[in-house]
Length: 358
Image 1 (cartoon, rainbow, N blue to C red):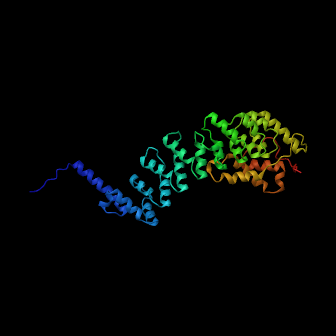
Image 2 (tube, helix red, strand yellow):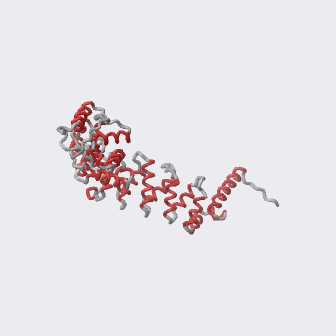
Image 3 (cartoon, rainbow, N blue to C red):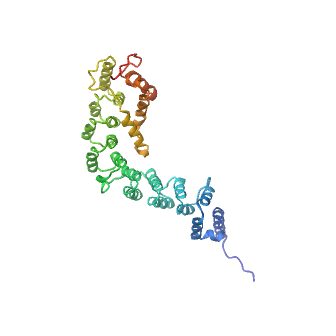
């Protein structure tokens, strides 16, 4: 007696599609159809391969979308290069459960580069604090790697328990830039950071939530980069407190102000200087190349420490390497003008007068 097939066409179609899907994955993993159906066998097989063979499988997806279930398996690899490649493969979507699982696992990976990449995914994709972002910060702020602690410190909404014992300048600099803390925490933190290194004070000076009382104290800082940093985030009161500064970069930044009073005063200062009368200078104009070089080198370790002032200071450093010419105001200002496309409005750059600092 012939047995009739009682399965509906719809079910048959679903089974066929499922079989085709399995066959497609089977080709990439080199498993039989039966083995491909068993996820545990699939994972065990992948783990048994050496790094090169795992890379070969990954490379088969170079121009294709990797199925989420396979992406999950790839990230369980013991090979750090594979796990890192998985993290860099996708643009993190917080609504994708597989990606969320992978990123969560990455936060506790034994490799610090992988932990950092997972943290970047979260901060780049989740702007408002939710459970995932909050958990990532709580984990990152206690990490043994200072770069991970620093990135977490920049975004945390709560001060770490032992923040006063933090010894890393990088972490303290990121805390100095943090604007997410509540007002009371910020005031306590800023009072503490005011007494830290000039690098920390440099980043503190640019904080948009810095109290004016601390900003005024920083305007008298012994390190010129700290004083210059204030001019990227400041009020007219702070600008006026720096109007007699003798640092050439600060004079240049003040010249970019839209305030007519500041322009007029700078004009008088520079005209006196070019004419050989230094009565409006408490000290001869100068530029500290060493401090700016230190800051440039320091900031290269973490992208968030990069600062707009570094572009300008780098031009000043470049010009200073030309030797004695640097110590002549009109050529310096002309150089800055040509490099930055900014007009220094307070001196006649066509003047042939060049007064040295001696």
